[in-house]
Amino acid sequence: MRILLINMPTPPQLSFGRSTQPLGLAYLAAVCAREGHEVEILEGNRLRATVDDLIGACLGGRYGVIGFSATSPSYPYVADVARRYRAAGGDALLVIGGHHVSAIGGHTALQDAPELDVAVMGEGEAAFLELVTRRDRGGDCATVAGTVARGPAGVRGNPGRPLVNDLDSLPLPARHLLPPLTEYAGVRRWPTLDVVPCATLAASRGCPYRCTFCDIQMFYRRESGPMRRVRSPERVVDEMSEIRKGYTRLHFAFMDDLFPYAPNWIRRFTAALEEHGKPGTFSFAGRADQIVRHPELLDLLARAGCSSIEMGIESGSQPVLDRYRKDLEVATNLKAIQLVQRSGIRTIVDFIMFDPWTTLAELRENLAFLRAARTDAGFPTAVYTRLTFYPGTPLYDRWMAEGPLDEDDPQWFRDPAVREVWHALSEFRSACQRGINDEVNTWRRIHRETHGSGDGQVRELAVDSMYAARRLPYRVLEELVTAASGGELRTAKADVLQRAVQNVRDLAQRREALAAQTVPSGQVREYDALLSS
Image (tube, rainbow, N blue to C red):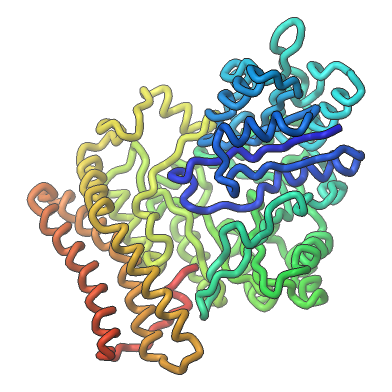
């Protein structure tokens, strides 16, 4: 049977300009292809596909089954595609899946899009393959376990099905059906800051923790079987080596909910990497307490090619960590960051600066933590980050119970002082962030172009300027919070914003000085620790 799998396009303003290969669809395609079915993947994000493009593709292939994978931002477009496809005479079985559908529930998904036939809940490999098999043989597609389906008697919820216990039993993702890695976002690597193709893969599935903002628990807990499952490290390295073919340089980004940072697994993993000649650099997401318990693993990982570790720090305030049920202490988070930094591996910090219940005291603690952790030169938009509410999570339920507000509503923040800080910060962002981004990119290019030329003074100036630009939003937020804490925000805001604009101009003047070959000297910095990729 011919099958079309569609990765629904996310609007550019909601994707933060980043994209990766859709592993979920690639696994579905591999499972179906192994059983002899003909599968195609339409990568809506890379094609920047419009609704007309999607409908044309659906109608053009005489498919028996069409599957839509949708995120929260792309979900609303599925109903339009399904409606217009049916209106044009399309008769394929229409299936939807993904985290968002599992969060809102299959009944809701089929109600939102009456033209859809089936919603797959949770992990989709076994359920989707059974749907395809039944459709191919003319069987009943309304009673497949692990789905909510539309049948003669209306929409029905079917029993769940066990999670895939043995992840090594799954075929490798059908990456050959996707655009090449060079068409996706790459990774900048030190010291040249050139872009290296980035491949995504997973060493495990599931997470045993209970963060109140995260939908991972909801996605897995509804089904039977062990939620936390791990592939054999040797199998993972075999996959990395296979992906590496055809590329001179490659970075591997593990998309695990929680990477298997455990002594036995890591030792086998790093040993296998050494045996395979270290196929490329790699990065993953881990927890601070795991790193603090086993710091000895960091040296093994660094030698094997680990370039960065992402940690869900979320906050430098203990009340916020408790609100998010992180089961972590601020001191543990700080120690983990310091351990990773000392190992030579870069730290990527996930942070939630604002939520509806944020207080000025929590903002002060956040900023103090970032300064102590030396992470304020990292991802500059962290200061603008507001909590995203995912259906089915405890914080979403609290938000709904208290009367949800659109994020543009001035009452979204419960604390009026925090509300004022946010609006002042938004003014700064509108006035300066584009200029900051331009300066970062320009100085990055200067550094890259002078790498290897022996002109260390220019490279030093470039890194210093990038660092100054990237930390500016943090400095502005610090000033705004200080002013608000003293009740002086309204009078101080104009001065803060004026200084910020001048700081951006100063960076531009540095470039003019460089062009005139009047490069000032400066103190050598620990660039690799200060500049994150």
